[in-house]
Structures are given as structure tokens and as C-alpha cells.
Length: 367
Image (cartoon, rainbow, N blue to C red; front, side):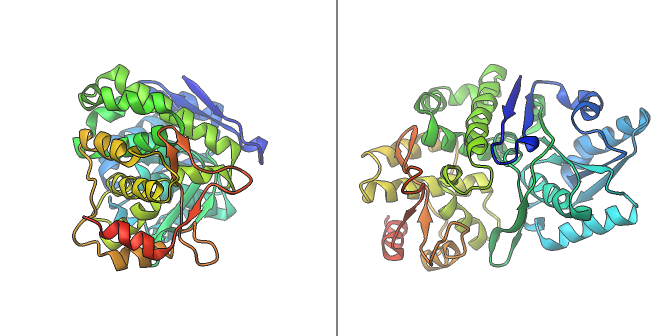
């Protein structure tokens, strides 16, 4: 299956997302068509490097490509300026020129860091995203957002850099732990909550098949979530408008990640964030009654946390939210649902809602 991302602002940067079992083994045929280059810098983490990276470099080198492997330690806490600098310096030491391309092979951290390296190396080289986790396949590999975390907050340094192609191979999900699978499913719930009530209902009823990694169920998750994100990104390449709806759950979620020093996985933090932000939407009279409860129920079925960790103190969470990228004129803003399947907002009034810190504090503090 091929899903096109037809960008409006930069039409020549439009790209395809390829979804099919076995695509990783066909990368040597995909690269010449979508991203020909004199050399490929394969960026991955220490975990995925051993699983897939070393073999891929060997295969590419064996058929005449110049392919170099660059790994960094796995974990969100390594998504830093230091990692970006180290990878860039190692590519320079390998004398990779502007005719090279970056292949980002891994989960969300690798997608973001590898993409940021590609965006900035010699002022920008082509990028191929090869996601290996569910979260990466349906979220971080799509849309061209790249970047690193800094002490002030998550993803505060970065660039928009669209890939030449995204290669999503659902067979790679077979090696995912149940924890990582659940983390990815948080983003699927988000997609249903903001854009597709029927898809949300599918997640409510078919959660057991998804967790059993039943291929048709899992492939439907990948396909539908990719379709939703691709459609939103195509309308708003640089998050100046409707793309903000993809941040549902992320204002609280990013704050939980930052205050936990990234001990809470991104998907887990977003799950918690969606519950609280759903409650905010109901309290403000934006969302229909019961919206937050339905979101909470499906997240619990998917084995995701739904309450903030005890260590995430409310005052610290609100302080972290003040560094969120959606803050405007000092206001904390949230992307909220109006009902399951419908995001709140429009192009005239905007797609995020300012909420008083006192109200946020009250909802986060409620038992």
C-alpha cells in the first residue's frame, strides 16, 4: 500500500509512505527509486542497530552501495544536542558529502534525531524514514518534524525536514514488547479521538486482536492512523493551523515526560495527557459529557496508564507546560476534542484553546 502526502506549501517535497510486510528486505530496491545517493548514513540506536542495522548495512554494502552505520545509546534521555553533535561529527569524519542521504532506522527517538541530523548536516541532505515501532510508523516518521530535547522541555530545538519516503514494514512489529506496542497504540487512540469515531470504536472492540499482533488488526491500525496523520499534515505542513489537533494529549503528556526525566514512555505520557485534557474539554463545555471517560476506558483496555504519576507534582507540570511550543502570549494552550472523532476548533478561531493555569491545576489535582 502507498499513501501519498501531497504537501501544499512545498509541492516538490510531497512524498510517499509505503506500508507492506517485508519492505525492510526490499530497501535496496526502494532507495534508488525514491532517494538515490552516493552514500547512505544509517542512523539508529544501540538496540535497533543489533536487531536490523548491522545486517542492513552489510546487505547494502554487498550490492555496491556505500553504507555507514552510526549508532547512539537507546532511550529518550539520549535525544539531546550532544547526540546530534556526535552523529554529525562522525559523519564529517567519515567524509560524507552533500551527495549522501540519511536513513533513520528505529523508533521515535531515532526518527527525530536522525531527521534533525539530515536537516542540518551540510545545510541539509535527503532523509529516508524507516520506522521500527508502532509509534514511529503511525506518528513520528510522518510530517517532517525533527529535533532534540533540552533541559527546558521536549522537542524545543529542531527543524521541519520532510523525508523522501517513509518505509513502514509491519513485520518489524513482531519484535515489539507489549509495553512498546501499548505506547504506540496511545497515538492510535488519539487519531480516533480527533478524527474518526469509527476507528476509535474499532480500537475499543478489537483491542485483544491488536495485542495478540493479529496481522489484519495490526495492519489496519497502521494503515488508518497513517491515513489520518498524512491527511492532516498535507493540509498544514508547518503546524500553523489544523495540524495542532495532533497535539491532543501532548501538552500534559510532554510535561509528564519532562518532569519524570523521561522515565515515562512518550505513548504512556500521551495516554495520561488525553484523559486529563479530555476532562479539561468537558469542564470548559467544549466536549460532550462522557468523552473523557470513554477515552480513559479504551486506554485501560490497551494497558496504558491513565493517572499522573505521584512523582509528577502539579506545580512542576504546569511550569513545564509554560515551555510548551503551543504557548502564545504566555497562555497555556490545548488541542481538545469536541466529541469522539471530532476535534474542537476551526481555521477562523484556531485549533487550540487557552486554559487558565488555575483551572489546569484544579483538574490535575482532582482525585
